[in-house]
Image (cartoon, rainbow, N blue to C red; front, side, top):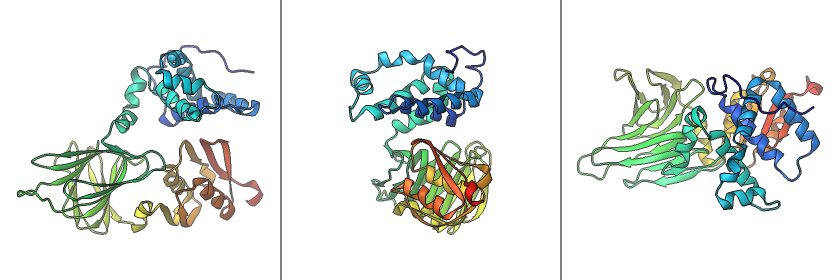
Length: 335
């Protein structure tokens, strides 16, 4: 039995649809439009829609913007409709994001991806990049990162819109030394001659800083009195209202600069969160196996291989609903 037709819900605009559900809906759109979409895929899509009201609302949102395809630029519309065109799937993904970002509250919720696309420098999922700034400072961008460079006569600033960066500051060549800042939506980190990472944000909405050389002053965005100096070998975080020290910095956290994840007794849920930064779509962890420990060195260039390795070494199985919707769950044969 097919899902009900589109019905405008009274709270469709008032209740925000979670970002992960919007991404799932976009992934379903891509998969359903593929040339090899099977009846089994369509059955799973129907079950997904019926599993939670938010799922149905997300899909209704896509249906309500179904006419958007007619307004797409000709090359994109052509690639979307032309079977066998190599650009078709990428165009479908772009169309899905256009559909999901369209209109009112949804556009406001998706302002961060728009900022990502218009940033001075950015990386896509699974990509990394290196920059050398005008003063000789080196910056490495992790997967899914976007930054703006704002150098003026009085300061050197990076605006981190999304993702994670590793910064190795250089001495300012200007006669009057300018401070070096990394600003996020939560506040700022001021380098005091150093090498450090900034990541924005974590699950609690805080920007995280780890210092490996020198020192960094972190400061809350709204509370001017909330400031803390982090020394080499320590890490901390800041929100719009507060700052805190979070103990020792983990050198393994920089392994992404070498294309690796290095884990030592890392909870599986956290490991998959890290791996998911380098893989498109949704990568979820069943709570029943979230606490399993992961150790080893894993290459980021082939996330499918990493998932296979987990299924070999842990009592888990990898369920692929689609290429873009993966869940790691208990393997009943090994419990």
